[in-house]
Length: 253
Image (cartoon, rainbow, N blue to C red; front, side, top):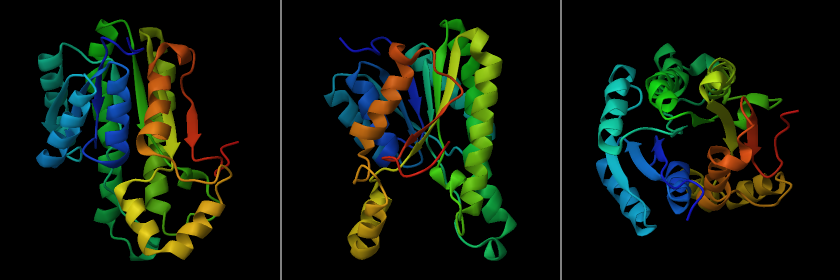
């Protein structure tokens, strides 16, 4: 028996890294998982891992930047699973670099895949969550929002700060429907970060020393399990919050 038995989750960007870790953690606690992402082979791999945990999983190829297509994707999930209880907006395809060298298109790409996509998923899921008596939304943001020096991270931080505000608004407006909305700001050893640490060992060690707990989080054990807690009954009174999952590195105070 898991604390999420009978629940149905949508996880975007679930083909690898943090999204995959979240999907596996939810599955371990009994949730069925709709695995969303752009690469079918990666989605199939995550679904296979979820099924090994004894949970139901189905792949749904989806580019979250195509926000007009999102309602139909949610309808497809509901038709195949019967509803939605948990929404995790993890997918993001944005841009990094100095502001003066960034094109308008590159800047806007982060907003389309970030807050615009999350907004479309949240609105599409709302009636289904309300029909089932409530639900839990978890949006992924970043500690770059509160860095004193966000140089080269400005576009990323701006998109995530918009998402953070959107989450807080949903928490306020949808609480009466039994729907909770929270943010997490994770540091996790995703494939991209693992590559960077392996190819830049000295910089990676310097970065690790800035983390009070002394290590970069695991996608499932540290990030995924936190999402389980947010989606489960033990934190039912928590909504509108931003939870830093970074080993104590950032100051959200």
